[in-house]
Structure formats: C-alpha cells, structure tokens
View 1 (cartoon, rainbow, N blue to C red):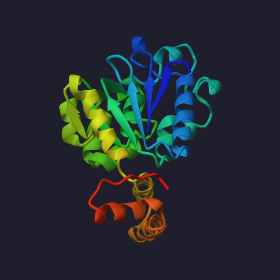
View 2 (cartoon, rainbow, N blue to C red):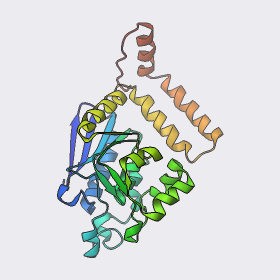
View 3 (cartoon, rainbow, N blue to C red):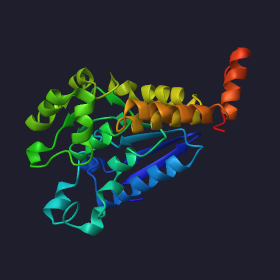
View 4 (cartoon, rainbow, N blue to C red):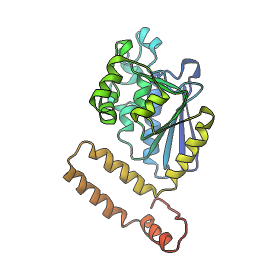
Length: 259
C-alpha cells in the first residue's frame, strides 16, 4: 500500500499513515486503502481493536493541499478520492463495531481532526494539537460538524470551528476532545495498556455496546432501549456469557473467545 502500513499483533491491527515528510497529508490512495482496511478489520471477528496513528512527528495534516492546488483530489478528481464521500474513512469509522483507538502522536489539521474525532478513544501526546480548516476556506467536511456539537455543545463547537484557533493538547483535554494526554515518551506504553484492557473484554459484548451507543445517537430512548434488550438477549446465548459466569463463580480470570 502506498503511504499506509498495517501491522497485526494477536487481536490488534495498527494502521499507520506513512508520509512523515508531508505530515501524513491524505492522498486518494491512502483513503481508499484505509477504508478497505477498516472494513476488513470490522468483518474479522478475531480483530478486537484497531489503532490508528501517523508516522513521524505528526498525526495527519489533512487533505493534500499540493494535490488540490494541482487540480487533483476531493472535488477535482473523481478518481482520486472516489465519488462517494460516505466511502471515505471518517464515514466508515461511524459504521464500525470494532473499537478504534486513535494514537494521536502529533498535530492534526482539517481532515486529520475529523479522523481523530471519528475514533472511539483518543489518546494524545502532549505534542498533539488540533487545527480546524476554516483558515483554508474549508469546513470539517468529514464528520466534524456532526461530531463537535455532540462532543462539546453548540457554543464551544462554534468557537472551535468558526475561529480556527489551534488547540493544544491541554485545551483538547479540557474540552473533552481526547480521553487523556500523556508525555510523548509515554504514548506507546499508554496506548498498549488501553488496548490490552479492551482486548481482554468479551469482544461480542464490546461490539454490541458500541453498536447500541452509536445507533442511540440517532434514535429515541424507547427505540434504543428495545435495541439494547435484543442485543442483551443475544449475548445471553453466547459461550462468552457462560464463561463470564463460570469465571465469576470460580474466582478466576475469564478467557473470552468471541463466540
């Protein structure tokens, strides 16, 4: 894959944007490969977590402005990014049941901010930052305008989006845009620890919980309650639920198989 790497270790797939010389600016091939990988990970029931990160000192500087200036890319080259925007990674992220953890290793701008916010958990380095795209005469086109008001409320979302101010890691944490901020030297160990914790959980229940919360954002309380009950009854029939009961009664760690 051009400018993208994927590594699998046990139940975890790490997807890394690999254009460090361009702060991992997004190209058409990167988007297509990332979308495909995310869908494949979600379909593979042996994958219990995905980690999304960037190589080098940045997470993602956004859409490749050099491509756009050359008349290529989103809105200028239908073959470059595809004609269906809902097939691009931020939209694919919203449809996944497998948990996705963002390893926010450095600056994110524009499209990169939407990628990070589209993940389920964001673990940030103290070197990380968010820069909205309004200064480039653009807007958060890939989920940011939907996510931000839900994450921080209307007034703060307007402050973030309309003024284009760069947010450092401490401000991102204060606003609730990231889960935690750690020293750059501690980022990998922290990500590994959080990933290990979620991988140790019963994977069918993790996927069901994420799915129920995601669908709940667009449904009424009553509708979501009925959906959750259906999920729960299905989980009661699984081998993992029997294992949870047995491990509790036998006072031992559970060994979940995802069945």
